[in-house]
Each structure stands twice: as C-alpha cells, then as structure tokens.
Image 1 (tube, rainbow, N blue to C red):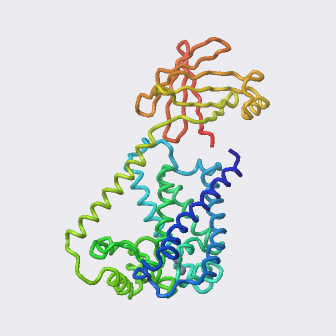
Image 2: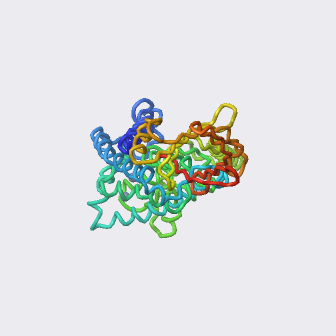
Image 3: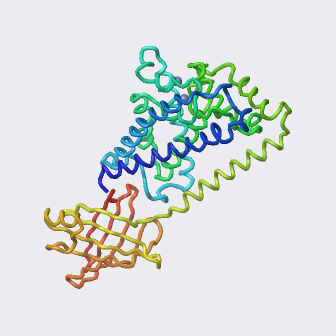
Length: 400
Ligand SMILES: [Zn+2]
Ligand SMILES: [Zn+2]
C-alpha cells in the first residue's frame, strides 16, 4: 500500500473512532437518557449546542495530526529506529498488558508537565486556549485542541515507541484505552460505581469530576489518568473529594458501603482485565505469513509466505537480477526476464523462532535445497539454504 493510502486508512479509522466513542456516550447522556442521568451531572447546566459544533470542528484538525504522526512512526523508515516488535514470543505474553500499563504511566507523566507548562500565561493562548473554551466539557471536547497542542499531545507516541518495546496489540490497546479514558474525563457526568470511593483505587485514579474541575476552574488537577503528580506537587484541587462525594451521595445516598461490596467488584474488575489481555495476546501467535523483501548482494528479492491448513509454511521467493526486473517484480510482473523463482515448501515451526524441514525448490534448475528460517529479535527473517555442504543466508525485512 502506498504511504498516502495508509495515511487515508488511519485518518478514516481515527475519525470513525472519534465519532463512535464520543458519539455513543453523547447520544446516551445528552439526548436519549438525559433525564435518567440527571443525578450524575457534574455541572448543573448542559453546554450550548453551538459549543458541541465548535468542539467537533476543533477535533477534526487533531484527528489529522494524530494520523500524520502515527503514519510517520509506523510506515516510514523511522519504524526501524523504534522498539516496536511483531513476534509476540520475543517477550513474555505478560509484557503486553504490562507495557500498556507502563505506557499509561509514562503518558500521564508527560501529559502532567506538558499540560502545566501550557498553562503558562505567555504561551497559554497559543497552545491551550481552544481546549479551555469548554468550561463545561462534553465527550466532543476530548480532541478539541490548538494545532501546537495536538502535535505536543501526540508526540507521546514517538516517545513511547523509542523507549518501550511495544507489540502492535499493545499500541492499539493503549490508543483505545487512552481515548476511552479521555472521553470519560470529559463526559460531564460521573459514572463511577459506588464502591470505587472506598477502594484504594480512588486514591490513585482520576475521575470525570477530577478533570471537569480543571475545565471549570482553569487550574489544578493537571494530570490525565492518575492523581499522584498533582498530589505530590501540590496542584490538586482542594475541593475535589468534596465535589465527588456530593455527586455520588446524590446518586446513591450516604450510607457507608460494607467491605464485601468493595472487594468483590474490585476483584472481578481485575480478573476480567487480566482475562481480556491474555486473550488478546494469545490470539496472535508467532507467524511469518505475509510479504517480505530482501536486499542481498545479488539484488533484490520479493518473498510471499503463507501458512497452509496443515500448519506448514509455503511461499514464493523471486530474485530479480537487475533494476528493471526489480521494478517488474515490484509491479507484480513476476516471470519476465531472468528473475529466479524459488518455491518454499513445507516449513514447520520447531519452536525458538525457527522453521525447519522445508525446502527451497528452483523450478528452472529442478533443484531442491534444504532450508531453515529464523525470525530474529529485530523482526527480520533469516533464511538459510544448505546445498552440497555449503550454506547461504538472506535477511528478509517485512514489507510495509
Ligand atoms: Zn488545561
Ligand atoms: Zn480537558
């Protein structure tokens, strides 16, 4: 796929994500069940319709910025300087949920200082003013930023892929989780269950009331997911707990919760999260299927690998000997000229990132060469052919 097509795909999916994830809560809380959720409202009045349109308009630019940054990171040669890995087995399966959690902690830290800095009176109106036009935020506020802020916000992706080994599943989960928390922070309604107040999580995690107070009063409560930076550096809004309790008491009354009512839902939440994360990871086992390119000393080669129903790997390997043939190969005109075709047959996964017992068959010479494929830590494939006591290796890079 061309770079522009990939950018278009990311642009459309980010836009889709915004309208679905902000649109559904908006319909539920601001349109269909507005009356049912009256007690959950954080500020008495509902924002004006005009505000919603401005927020959506502002968010379009942010979606563009996110898409450009994500495409530059994932689909250009910059990808090679990142720690993004594709083979789940390169790290323990537990690394996926752990890396998502670490990403949230790093993002929260980055956001806290960036956000505090953007409130500096000399730069506030160039960087952060658009977001604060919403003194009573709605789900549509979550992407409503100035251009500079949109860029700064999304630089976190560049930072994360440079310092943490991240699997695409972890990247996707982090992006989605971060966006859902962002929507919740701007919801305008408190929806936390009653037990949350008596659990230790209340001391650690932000709520919708927390970020709403930031929009209402312009300062304090700068952090995104966690309370620790604000508490440590004395920027937490002093009336936060009181405001939170007022809303929750309006919803549930002021009877104290029994210990059992706190522990059971908390435990269930942890079990469901663990189950979901390990399900997500195990569904993507080691695979070398897909398109690969090699740039050996005797020219470029294009490789297609697929897994057959019998669990073995097959593929085609076309070596192109001069630039013209390389172009033809890339355009899919496979058999012209002197390009050499090999067929990969019956490679079996033998553990430890190795595929063995396969052959490379060259139809033009009717020759079978024993082969072995290894998936390296760097994400490259090393294919080695053994013939009459000699061996030759190629390095293949995944075509993106
Ligand atoms: Zn702010
Ligand atoms: Zn906000």
